[in-house]
Amino acid sequence: MEKPIHLPRWEELPVIDLYIDQVVTLLEEWLDFIPHSDEKLITKSMINNYVKHGIVEAPKKRRYTTTHLAYLIVVCIFKQVYSMNEITQMIRLQVHAYPIEQAYNYYIEDLEACILSIYNGEAVTHQKVDTNDPLTKILHSVNESLVNKFNVQRLIKEVKEKNVE
View 1 (spheres, rainbow, N blue to C red):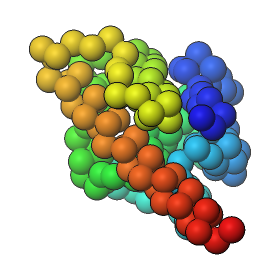
View 2: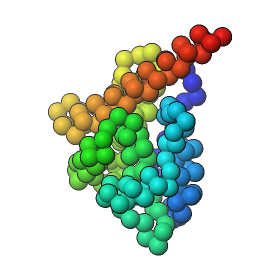
View 3: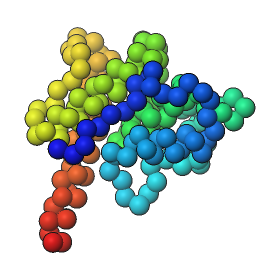
């Protein structure tokens, strides 16, 4: 397995407000596990578009808060598979049902559990499985689709590297 993936929990996110350049730098660092081509994972223009389309709240005095960071982490991950409309709907469902700190931490913990399962060649396991809760089903399905996509991309890269040698 590659290095363990750790995304910041709510309490690990910066508590000071950040400028957009700082936000981009942190997101690139935290999300470096996401396979991507030469295309940037996040840019200032992308963030501005997310704000413009109401996916992320506008910054206050050009500074981004902990809440902005949490939203942007989730958006960057979700956009690997889902449309902006779907992303907006899924985020709104979760934050309507749970405090944002709880919704964010639960999502991150579940994603890491899924990633670890796939990279260890095991069946996908989830955190706090509650099959009766439709929001939990959505979250688990989202993470399975994302992790399976990441795994396919990783396997393709491995095959290409072996064929080049």
